Image (cartoon, rainbow, N blue to C red):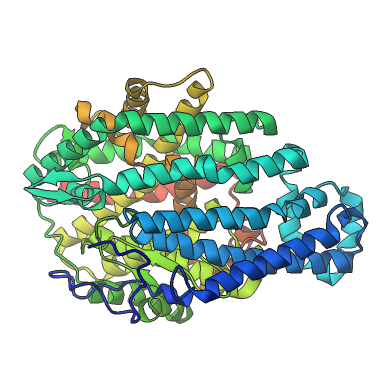
Length: 612
């Protein structure tokens, strides 16, 4: 697709550049729901309005927040919320335009210019949270007796959780203003470099999304060729990716030291509102389960594939008797919405809005952001989903996953508003993984063919291993990299050694690796954009496994309680949200219960295998 400067998205939600063979017409975003174009007068007006409002709020209240009564402080936060939603709308639009084609220089410049403009506006608002955090607990509690301020109690709770790590006003302002030329700039370098890489496979120059998809191709020679091409291109660019990784890890270490975070992952735990011991219990439980989960499963798969060992490019390969047919877009839509509807018609109705309203961008194209995501934007608009849909069963599960994020974001935004709708990463993965589980169970219940049923079970087990085992291994990789980086820069070779250590530990002795796999750490965007994000996937999967067990045993009234949990957004912590289901993530047995679900599916596969 040829990049066009200041490209305006298509007007109709079902308009795509051209029908992809066998998939049918794929939808693209209707970003004019946010703004008509990057140079739209509406966008300029919003920026001017936010600038004016921020200046007025600053001039009126800076240095005075501690002396405000509850009513006035509530009014101040309400105005702060309005301004923050305006600039969040602008940045959401800029991020989505950029993600549509990161190879277009105009999109990159627009994204950067919006970041700089918004940073200038929000710098005037820093005083709000800084001064709120200097109010003592007793005084703030008295102020919250007024309903105008009491509404924002969950937001105040979360803001004040960072009080021990807050720096002086000048330092906070410096860090805020330098973000656009610091971490954000390195993120952009990573994104644009990855978007421009091409991987020669089968006589074609493929994007990273297309090349990675080849690792699940039915033909073993194609998988091997793709793996070697990926590893070779990653190796050729490893010095750049190592430099980006080292700079960002050092940048984080400097800020962590100033903020007095004891470990590199402490800040992430705090922002996720999850206790260190809960994360430690999760990670320990998953690592202890490696032998009976991933090690056992991949040994089984090696035999299914005709050997005692499994080459790494066969790890996500379809089983020999799995047809893994191409699933057109319209069929994928039906599969996912039907699964959602069987659980809750209300959930499916919200999901239908994404397909009918131009809220999904599905085609794979050069320059587009790889992978998939759900962007919440702001409550006054609606979320947008990005996919790279290629018609595989895993793509259908990805659609179910991202749609779960989307309906969660809609429910929380409509109920709680802008400041209170934001959900910690650990809980943000709940609805997405639950959406996958509903879709999988729907397909499994309808399948009567023994071979196809085994293929479905195996595919789900592999998805769960990728979500739980692989993400905890990623977390371990980050822990080791960031810890060692405190002692000096890590070489490309050392990064590869750490990567291979955690891969061998997590995937087990049945996997064969060659030297090309030592460079696969380079493409993981979470390491760059959101350090230590990855354990949230394992948290969400194990949590959903426990939730689904409750649903299976006590279905009456479950859907209503589940929707209430999603509507809560960021107003409740995990203990409060799970209490209506009789679950407690602080219980050491909680994670074992979730992991047992994966073990049971592997056991079912083993039983079917022995009976053949």
